Image 1: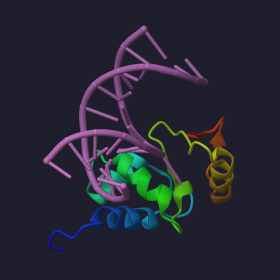
Image 2: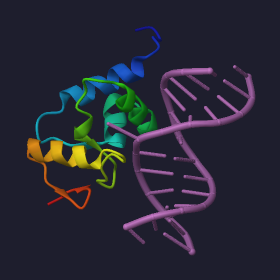
Image 3: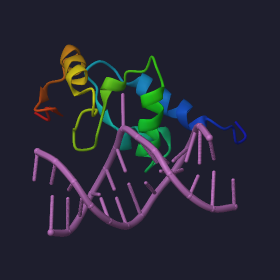
Image 4: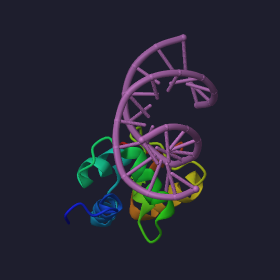
Length: 92
DNA sequence: TATCTGACGATAG
DNA sequence: CCTATCGCCAGAT
């Protein structure tokens, strides 16, 4: 822990893993929770290449779903109890 | 060290 | 609703 590299993805992974069913958070939220406020982009990069993580529980700040996977993303969220509206997370 | 990329965020038009 | 631009950050080359 004395300046280890890759700490970022580790922290981000842990935060995402800590999310429960029906729990959705935005990239910026994940970055902040991980201890890297403002690193929303880096979070997206980790999620996009990392496998085994509940990426579907992560959405954009405006509730937008993942581009290119909106169909599957919406389907997964619906399966977890999260409602999706027009390619966006139902804030309701 | 410099440059580019990207599943971001916000604002503006 | 969509595109454009700026700012932000970590990782890859």
